[in-house]
Amino acid sequence: MLFYVLLFLGIVSLWWHWKARDRMKVTNLTGKYIFITGCDTGFGNMAAKIFDIKGFRVFASCLTETGAKELKAVTSNQLQTVLLDVRDSDNVKKVAAWVKAEVQAEGLWGLVNNAGIMGPSVPTDWLDIEHFREPIEVNLIGLINVTINMLPLIKKAKGRIVNVSSVGGRLAFSGGGYFPSKFGVEGFNDSLRRDMAAFGVKVCCIQPGLFKTALSNPANVMKEKEVIWNKLPPDIKMQYGEDYFQKDAAKKQKLSKICLNKDISLVVQCMEHALTSLHPRAHYVVGQDAKLFWNPLSRMPAVIQDFLLLQNRAELAVSHAK
Image (tube, rainbow, N blue to C red; front, side):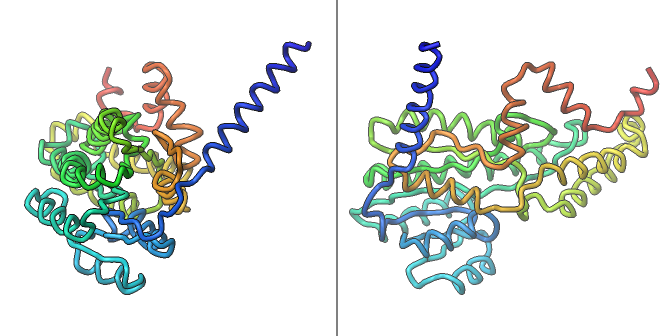
């Protein structure tokens, strides 16, 4: 009996120690420079506003002039916006040079790689290589390119790199380029974290579930799928069945409603912890769907993953023909 009491007390003590360690903050961060990509909308937009209020000197990169103007209109004079297309290497190099001139000897405390796109999420045999190329160019190659160009400034400040991945980087539950791109982000993040440890640079990865952002807008997602479906050759449509699109869409929409997280500030809170904690976590799993379903499922045997994920797909016409 004494053994179990001691075991319980030991577990409680370790948990309490971990919580206390998790709450420890880096001091004197006011005025530190951070660079955030993808600030037009969603996580990046909210992060830029919040970190500006908290006293960071924020460089907020936007893809569009409209996004940059709207963000600048609601933030302080200390926040600076810049136009950046992470797919454009020359653009990335010029922006990195501009940031270097701004931060000078102080370096860059934080880099938040948030820019990303979804791309079509449909069966692989509906797609061509261009459907895969764009999400991979933005979500993975663009992220790596920005990181490489900003890395000397991060090393100078012994700062933080925060990569926004997805639970889709642990579990591919549909076809398309989004999931390969996020699996790549996970691999890059892990290797970078180990490479930078000797330089005092902390590298963190955020793995959100399904959140209500422009990226996951149901109307846009369904419109993109429908365009691809309408262009499919007759033999592919025959294999799937003429009513497959509607049936599968109904299943996907039902799951999305169950899984959707509406409070995007949860992701920004993880960004803040990664930038300000004395002991940031290597990975942040965010959202009830991610914590309770997608993350646990990603650790299960493939046979269980396949069984559960295939339940959310409409049956194909060829299945009836067997």
